[in-house]
Image 1 (cartoon, rainbow, N blue to C red):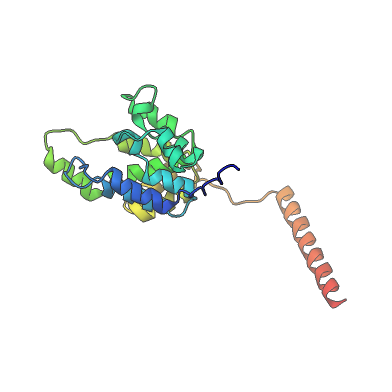
Image 2: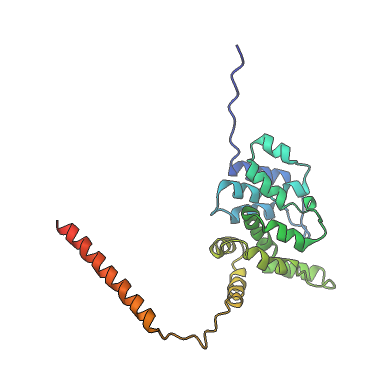
Length: 224
């Protein structure tokens, strides 16, 4: 008789969170802060999305900053989709890792990867962090690559999804998002005409008549 197959343990969001903490435990960011705080914040910001996206959020830097491979992740139970997202947001795996904006455009071709990158960008753009970096390196020009990346990322996903992420991780960017939306709206509101033509009025009248007729039929059915 063959040995019974061992049960397959499902790789959960909580598993990803624990793995992220362990994998990045000894790492520090540019401000000498625990790097695990960043990856946990990115994962937490994606709480409104499905498990694959949340798992990829917690593990978005694991292939960049640790020896962990795609196959190792798959062997642990990470889904193919989550592994694909992780690989897409891993800069060192891009065709030209030194071309940051080309990498952003590549990421923006995938919905899940874009959401993860929006969360990553937003956490790196927190006002307190930007200020601390500027104070630590006053002679260096301000980093603008995150600013330049955001319009590309925002354009690739529904606005409400971006809002949900920003509201959780960096609400200060919501005003910038609204400004970008205003710039993208080329409607000439000053000269916008609200006058209706005869054909518009006729169509509106016909629609109203249909609504009334429909309501009358519904009422008749109810009385019967």
